[in-house]
Length: 270
Image 1 (cartoon, rainbow, N blue to C red):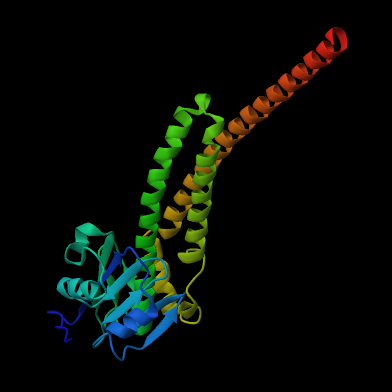
Image 2 (image 1 turned 135 degrees about the vertical axis):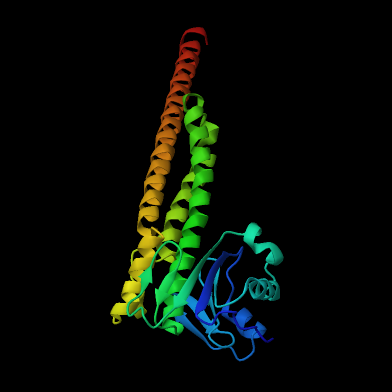
């Protein structure tokens, strides 16, 4: 498959797309013969065509570097991603254009563009990783919004919560714990990428783009929401446990009462 060149060779478009499943290495190698893949932060990056890179994260985000929208649709279709032809509306996505200009000795990033004087695999990987983290965070943000609605329902019926609700509460608590684990284990928001440690310009590129996308601030909001969800579940669980204890206490009291009645019956009547 031949890919067309961009109309403006100085402009490169990055597009990160949420996908419903994680693309495995063998799937990419099977679809793109001779593709050489390397790893960055447990994700895969490979060059497809001249200066066209595909970044596959381990948390279900594909980032396309230097591809047109039609080329992106074609690749998504080849990888059997549902809704490929309408990915802009079917899946979460985020794009960021890059302008390559020799006058920019250091990377400059604003809310609209990335400006830099060089472009290579390392630069593409840093930008792709950061954009994929942003889309991955947005995916988690939407998931937590749904859980916040569930949490509201818990608070609304907390006075009338039943012992039989314990199973649902435990399932909800488990989903919250998994959400937090996945964020810390997969999105790598607390660590700088390894390839940026020994390169000041790559580090600056990552730090600027991360700040522009507000990754750390958004992560802190997610942490706050998760803590709120944990507290609401713990409160509801404590109430259920208290009601369960009271229920067991009454059963024990009634059993003792029945035993006393039978003892009295046996002693005085029989």
